[in-house]
Length: 82
Image (cartoon, rainbow, N blue to C red; front, side):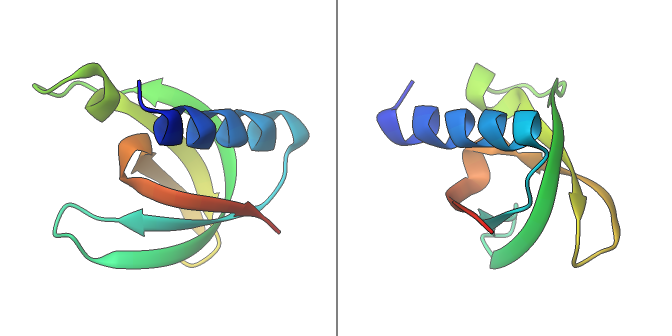
């Protein structure tokens, strides 16, 4: 597990525990970058045919979409507490 991935995972875990809103930079499957303000809720494993890191996802309330969304953790490039 890369140091960057581990740091993002740990910050997301802190946000879940503290019920904090965070700002993430996220790259979707088409390589489009977006910035989202989210409230992380829980981690989930999603069935995928690639490696472990691709399967770990985050369920979060997305303030942009105003609904619960799923984010692949490995696609999150940065995170900041709001």
